[in-house]
Length: 251
Ligand code: NDP
Image 1 (cartoon, helix red, strand yellow):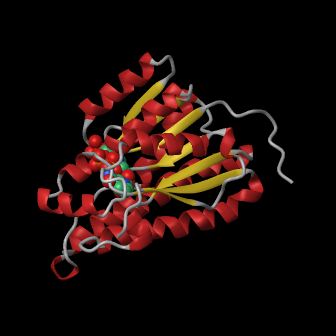
Image 2 (image 1 turned 45 degrees about the vertical axis):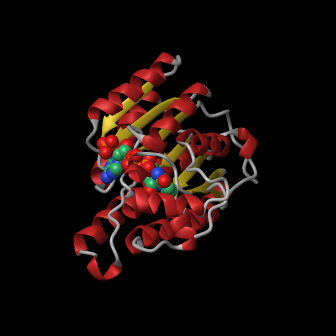
């Protein structure tokens, strides 16, 4: 049976923390007293703003540029964060992109950009963060999938494949690392108001709204609340689960 030696310090990693859901998770974890290291791909200005907001909550926050689709950058982000903040107890693999197009019009680039960030990025981030957790025999992982990965969505074969892959990845990881005291769960949001969904044409937005029982898109804070719960001690017996947060969407 697993017995953690000492309580882990509250240090979390969030990929893609400069905007949207990732930024809300950084703020929420900071409010809960977590020191947070996060990465972003290119939007340094937004990253600095989130870093400042989190620091003003009285915790340490470190924003570093790293493209998680590159295994070397992902590894060095995790290592630098551990060097500066200390041992990471929770990792949230959130970074993601969309390149929506019907299958027959989808280019190789559309396919690979989505797979590289959304699926390979999760692999790179988790591999780098879980290795030291195994040695410490404690930690938890949250991956960001999507209702598109659970139910499918037209125009998103690339995205849905990556997000379904994340579910298989996380369930397998949960079984692999559970005996070592590490939990792994999936958050699968529906439509959440962020830059990602701002890009939707208003006709699609109206159609999608009518398919949501609560008749509104979710907020980033609502996804962050669920993530904060999953990394907390209150979720100590939750692993290998896929938690959908979608306001009752029918896809
Ligand atoms: P946003 O587009 O608002 O933000 C994406 C974040 O990821 C940014 O911080 C961006 O950095 C970062 N990022 C993108 N690519 C990389 C990369 N290769 N390496 C490092 N960081 C990267 O997305 P959302 O907040 O909307 O989405 C967050 C997650 O939630 C994604 O995985 C998405 O698929 C998932 N999701 C979102 C839904 C929604 O309705 N919004 C619904 C279901 C799931 P930078 O600022 O530098 O570009």
